[in-house]
Length: 237
Image 1 (tube, one colour):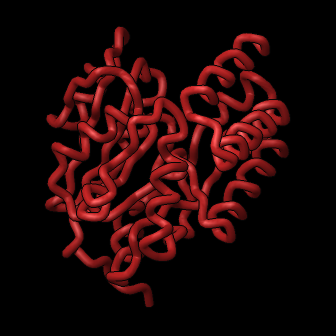
Image 2 (spheres, rainbow, N blue to C red; image 1 turned 45 degrees about the horizontal axis):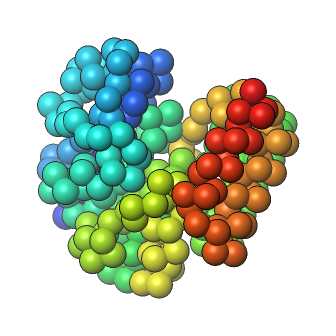
């Protein structure tokens, strides 16, 4: 018989957005809050209906200068939960996803973690990408931001939050988290949109992303990697 969730942990779900009117309502509608939880949407300057949609789901909608790390840090500064969960606007939590996080964070030594990943639509190529992400997360302890990273708020504050780097802010945070214990991988998967892979090609996007992360681990500055990423994106377009 499954154990009831530990309601002692409150969760702040933080969603950074810029012009996400197509995806946002579906994402926010799947966030099932318990008493004490909160949903915070941090807008980086949307010009579409993103703000209007966000306010249909939460009163906690705040404005920020653009930049995902900056937006998430501002959301965390406004949060009151014991656990911070950073959710991309095109990533959908599983049913009772927050209760799964509460169960995963019951061991006091767990610094945080992420969910297994499913990418929609589930084409063969995207299933392989998701399989690789789940292997990387489980054995390499390196989940990415589209897997709904979560972390104890006190630890997030002690680490200084997301870095000022303009790129790969999720990788930097995960590396810091790993120094404080083994990350938890929630077995219930989140579903993220495959739009990025489908727009540029599954093989090309996967190879490019792996090269970028590999160069980051070799010490190449995030600002340089972001410039290269944009250059490759323009060439592909």
